[in-house]
Length: 344
Length: 255
Image (cartoon, rainbow over all chains, first blue to last red; front, side):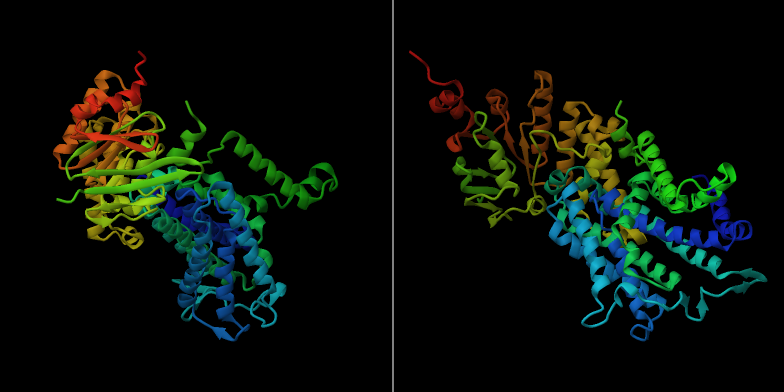
């Protein structure tokens, strides 16, 4: 990217929340904030699926673990109110250890077999969260945990509006910049990993695991590292989600969500950071863009013919099918993926 | 003097098939040893056992006098015994240069934190991996193709690349599984020259090959396998004159 291009992107990123809030309203800014968390999640999954080539269908579990760590340590549930700077890294570490716990027994598995086990793992975590309210109430079961501490750093709360240099900065705008910071950091760290000794080793494993081992790569350790690293990103995203939403319950962490994140990574272009970011933003925003299908029907057809909720999902599915038909390698594929799908 | 690699009485069976029966093999430092035998004689199985990819049922493998890790290919490679494959196994969608850079993994250190914070030491290491990978590519004559995707190289170049990648791990012993299979005479001669140059660097070689004449011009000693047994062992001249070897290759002379 040229220097001018970088400046343009920076200006766009900074002005985005103000423009959105002014023209589209707070609702859309809130949606944008959630979309940034999806980007963070997709960047995590990209390490596992895109770099190391390990198909993970239970990735949302790490998001859930991060969210519950935050929720349990910062809510009236146990009466603990730990600060953000302590809870987030802790959530990331707990999620990473769950990543290793998932990776360890599945080291010998690849492709579809691994996908099935990870899918089961994701469900196990959700069911645990659902049932850990008895005999000792830890997670409050299906009711979830409410009144979670809002995101705050010291005395700076992200749930309140602030006035900076005469500018009124709303809570959603403040949150946007907090999340944007995490996303940018994740992009930077992912990019550096990709072009490092470790990143090359992951890609070698993805290409040919046996050849990688015969070159002296400790494939077991490297695969566990990929699982842990991806889970780490997921855990941070989960913690931010809990603090932002103020409420977590197990139903936010279903298989459907795991599939959605995988779609973001695949649709954008596995292994390509720009693709993953764009894919995640698109898929996070598309369902919201399709929300007014009920209104459209009334305006153009006079009445509601099709159930808006069902139609919305249908259109979403159609969009995915079209995209996968014409660009199976994703919007911005990594070098390798593009060639895989378009052999001369 | 102890041999670099000393495999004693290696046995391996797959179900009812006895792939290897008490095969012994020594590779002294800096030597070129040939491993020949008809198809299915157990040559590749022996390679797989030596490089930790397959666990032997019996027998011991000593590396510089100490046992070689069993069933852990990456630790065998770390010890300095690296192989190539009969059906070339590159990282086909990485570039030629990246393939060789992966070879340096085992002799370098940078981890996740190094990648993230890009300390001076890490950047220096990365630069060195990069430069030395180019050197290896030039050394095997692939410099012009450095930025091509490995899977798109012509066959002979893929063989050379696989060797360059293995050399980047700084092996003491390089094991080549049929390095000239499917090559014409000219390509065979140029591969022979490359192998001779590898030996000049003090690296020992263990080479599987069918073509007795080709391997005889290169090797110090040859081991002949047949039906999983060690049929003969000796200098190329001895092997070429050995009646049992001729029989195994050509069958009985009918009178």
